[in-house]
Length: 322
Image 1 (tube, rainbow, N blue to C red):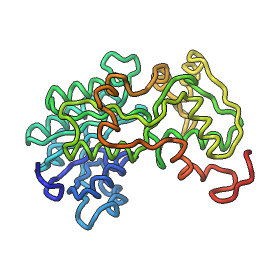
Image 2 (cartoon, helix red, strand yellow; image 1 turned 180 degrees about the vertical axis):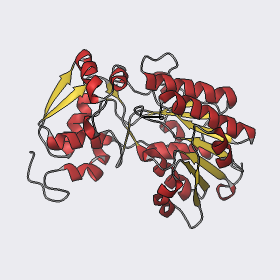
Image 3 (cartoon, rainbow, N blue to C red; image 1 turned 90 degrees about the vertical axis):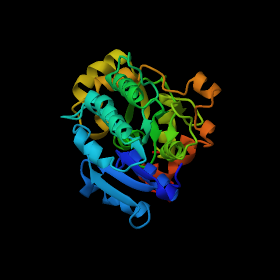
Image 4 (spheres, rainbow, N blue to C red; image 1 turned 120 degrees about the horizontal axis):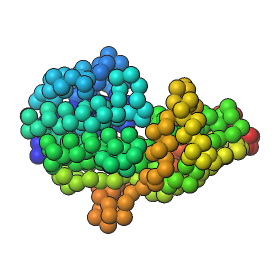
């Protein structure tokens, strides 16, 4: 395996939430990094994460295989981080998470590059939720072309720029009520830096080729538990109201068009019916963060470092719970 400084890694989706942390993790390990994005001119925020000339952004669109092949030229490793939480315009689950993943794998296979594919816990070709089904189909499409691809399946990812904890904190700042869809659904929130470390470990050859790793934090928490932690961190008292799935599905028909923290799609409601935790099989076989030598950070320990801005009195002044 070539040394990091001689290894060119092309990251698809490298300018997003998880992507910028992956770029930083690989830059610290001295890899040469090419970030393939639709708008390279908007990826300038990645440059300070590495040394001069170490990180380079190029144009690629997963709907155009020729652009993927051009982005992969001379690469040793491809990383696919591209994913969407809700469909919008031409950004559809199947085109992005199934067909896009397949196109990256094909481009990598043609030049003999390895691949690390980031999917999600719950990915299943037979899933009811379209998101999970397209993730499962994407995995199958990648493995059909590159059987030795390392697949990483994180649970819900949290961190400073996430659309999860920040979303509920923003809602709690303006609303006296926090509605809970899937109040007792079990999740295993995983810190974005830990996911990035797992990607870097896979790139460096620490992961077993062809294996599927499931990435979860140190605690299994219900949705109610998670919101309780968020409210504690931002020092606000709010009423949590559990919504039956039937009512939530009906409301989502309208809320799917809502902006910001209020947005909720019917497919997201379907996702929340199922637990999203690391399986017993993955634990037994060492296909976890711990199996990669990574000690996961907890939501309660890390969230205060970035959710403080949702407190009524800011970062330093504490006047009690509102």
